[in-house]
Length: 130
Image (cartoon, rainbow, N blue to C red; front, side):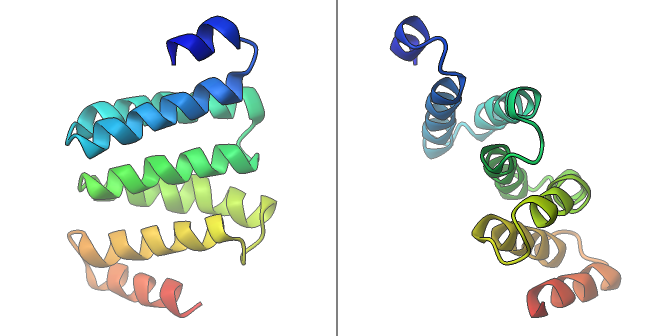
């Protein structure tokens, strides 16, 4: 990461990719809270530099969403995915794109596995059947 910042400081996407790799390593080491903080920063920078509808930004949002689900941040993850990511992904990438389908899967999983209410289970079932 330091080398990329030093020699390719103009390559913001390269820096974000390196930071994403660091966040993944943190998660693999069990340092999930630190990984989540870094993924939030990565997503915010991606939105600011490329816009919310950019495919790379949506992928970074998907990574963030997945991390929130894994940490059991059900309400935040559900709201973020349902209200921010999915509408943009459907509009920009289409409903059949891999990233959009993954977001649907994350949302359905969070609704089904989280502290479920009957309406959440019904919504999860609807998402998965679509």
